Image 1 (cartoon, helix red, strand yellow):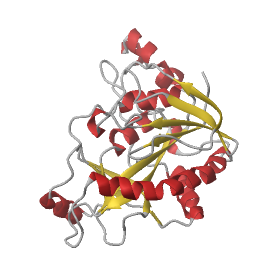
Image 2 (cartoon, one colour):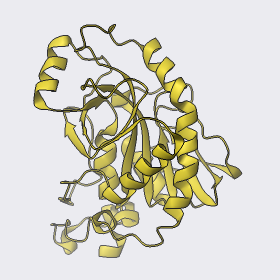
Image 3 (tube, helix red, strand yellow):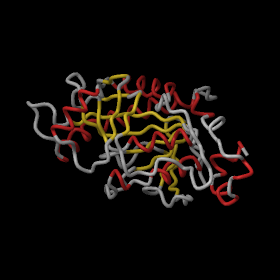
Image 4 (spheres, helix red, strand yellow):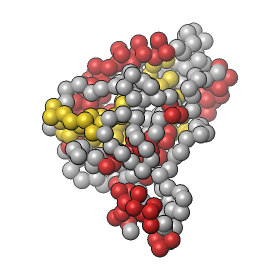
Length: 288
């Protein structure tokens, strides 16, 4: 099985990654089922990259149906240490205009029906999640996007809802009162699972609309979302080309992400079921 350092999870409108060389396609089985699609592994700017379309090729999987546990586990099994999530989002701020890009640093979780941990069933784990996005990787993503010349904002709170419906006007107005900056449907549970897997995780969030709070703008539609994502597609690909060698140059991880489980396992080691130890050896083996 081919190995990669950097994982790219493509969201709405991003179903492949051009420019890769020495390409292979990996179909990975996990204890949580199959990932969204086959994972494309190749070299870009001297860095081995694993690309996974979150919604599957052809966009077949709804946000709440994405098997994020399988996706993150599969990327971990390929050796991925850094993940960048490419996603669409609505803006809750006048100055975060459509076709700009946001590198968020916080998450507000409003999802209700998604498995958001690898653990349970005899193993209790409590990770620290005060900084849901890796500051080191987020800084590199910001620099990479900035090099493309695109409008990019560093920092912001990403509100995550289940969908698949867009917000009502009442919800949108209340979310703005809470002080969130962008809204989307897929950052949770990805960010939580990436931290449990000790993978650095950052987001490149592409603003497609003003949600429905903006009285002078049309209501959100899929056509609007896709049009703005396609307009930014070239930016995404150039940014990843800039990002890849930056990640390669990091050499050793010094952030908290790399050791997130070191103090998080609370269950007595002798009490962890043997089958669970086997299934999760990829994640917890070094702590047993």
